[in-house]
Length: 215
Image (cartoon, rainbow, N blue to C red; front, top):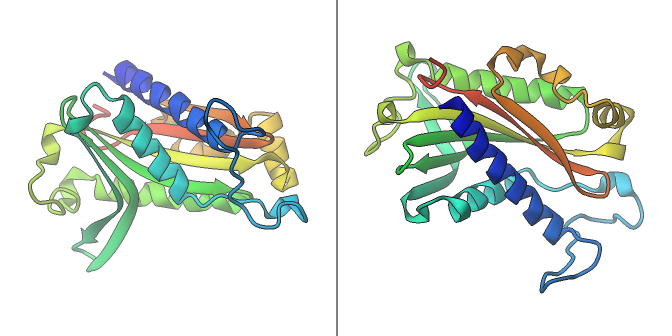
């Protein structure tokens, strides 16, 4: 099952990267236009940034578009989950329900420009696994009209990196050290990839089993 999941995510990721390449292309071609969604890039290239919400929305759009039966795929952003122990609501960046293939994906996204961003991403993942703990019942009591136990569930962390943002990002890209910084969750990784979609701009993902699916 994991190999099939990896193939599904790899195909979605490659198509998703293609969408970014079309949008950010140097020159308009094939009916597309070149769009640079950042401020003052002509004055200071270090100020280039793309909000991580675009990673989540584009990935979910791509997943649904290329799914065998798009009508059976539901996507949602900023999914609220209530923590009964702390009486606090947390939000997950993105959520995909593939009803035909009985798969769930919980998405978190992060812009990476310094090592502290990785630490923050690891914190997000710890929150996800806390909610995915079957014994806690936190996640399973959070949804109405959806029996999560009928699905295999996976967590996908989406990242983007501007290579020249800092010495750390340059080293990470050139030496392919992006996975080394993810060591806290290395034992859970099913797959990961980093791909250049525009000059010195890279997109990446990390795929991990969530509840039940790792067994």
